[in-house]
View (spheres, rainbow, N blue to C red):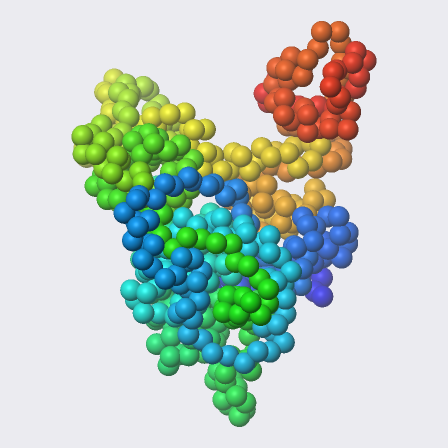
Amino acid sequence: MRSHTLLSLVLIGSLSACTATSPNNDQASQLDQEHQIAEQILVSCEQSKEQAEDHFDCESAQSGIIPITHPVEPVEVAVEVPKEIVEAAAEVEMKDLWQRVRSQLRFSFEDNKRIAAQRNWYLKHPSYMKRVALRAKPFLHLIVEKIEQQNVPMELALLPIVESAFDPFAYSHGRAAGMWQFIPSTGKRFGMKQTWWYDGRRDVLASTQGAIDYLNYLVEMFDGNWLHALAAYNSGEGRVQRAIRKNKKVGKPSDFWNLDLPKETRAYVPKLLALADILANGDKYSFDWPVIENVPLTEEVMVGSQIDLALAADMAGLTVKELHALNPGYNRWATDPNGPHHLLLPIDKVENFTDKLAKTDKSERLNWVRHKVKSGDSLLKLAKQYHTTPDIISQVNELKSNVIIAGEHLIVPVALKSLDSYSLSQEQRLVKTQSEKSGSHKLNHTVKSGDTFWDLSREYKVNLRQLAKWNGMAPTDTLRPGKTLVIWVNQVTKGQNDDAVMRSLTYTVRNGDSLARIAGKFNVKVSDLQKWNQSKLKKYLQPGQKLKIFVDVTRT
């Protein structure tokens, strides 16, 4: 095991060099960084098992990988399948979508210890597959049909399980995102647009097509060898090519099983093969895949212009959260003004939505304010104020330069509802993440030049991955000076306590007190009071009873 200092120096060096890597080596560079962070997590595991976020973190780190982070709980959208689709499905022999996948599996392989190890893990965790099925349900039919249309192996329909557990909001090291886990550069190479408004890596339709295109590119590169292609998808084509050349040079077999590859990649391909084996031989392993009906549940609708997601949700008869869960590629409160102009909707909502959309002029699909320019205003300042971009304000007002003059009026598009209504937007996901209580005291740290997550984790004596997760980031992310980080600790120094944003206190119940009254007094939720005092609370509060309360001093 390398020393802490060396690990930190190596990480900094890797991050500095990352921008200089070629597209072919991006995955390899990122995987190297993950291995370094995994070693750092292992340090935490060895120091104290209680410091690690959970046991799974330690297990994953031992394999050289950082566990996938799921910042959003699965959102289940109720769908009523139209009668004509149900009737058509009745004619189909395969009622279960997993059965449809099973009937088209192509890969043949000999069982081995590496496959068996992964298979045993999945067989021991049926609850994991239930969560996977819940996330997959709205999207799997679309993915299966796209795979059939493009005549690639149906095993690829199982790859999002390995990559992200079918979570389009998932991220690993911060640069890999979405159901198919694309880093920014590879995403762009294969057609996934990434802007302030939109990230195609999380768009299920765009990323699925990109994944198929990338895998087709890789399998052609490796002369039709799908195991090599899958290994390259995980660790980079350059790394796999070098491993093949190395084996050939010394007269060793160059099949996947004999290549010298990173630990993660050595486990990655067996994971997919293990899933395919379990699906193909469900009876043999007594494993029941959660049923997903073999009918389309969602449909892509072309909108033709930018639209506020709250308005679109209202037109479709959905909550904003439900709409955003089906369209996770949109980062903000509206779709990207420059496209794509599509929405994925429950199939039973499409007709009503398209009818209402046709009656709504493009100019009415956004909410607008008329802003009188004041002294000191700038396009950047206004963009931050109204949660848009300077380019949009400039474009809408046909400005010839970035100079705006006090006294003039500008038209600015704004969100129809309050920003917290768009709970799955990038901003609100971060707000929620940073607000989730993970200790007795919440501290704010302003990033200084040279700060790294590793250094800060040692300074505040907190777990490395937890620190990154509290801030909606990942351990390999570069910290920008001036950025405010949230840090949760259970014990603080005197100086830290004075600066703490969240502090604990003991409240003595008085005559006439109720949970609602106490919650209102300290600006906290009744549900939080109940959670903090589960063992103490009975049917009625008693005068003199002691309650623990965590108070955000910025809100009192």
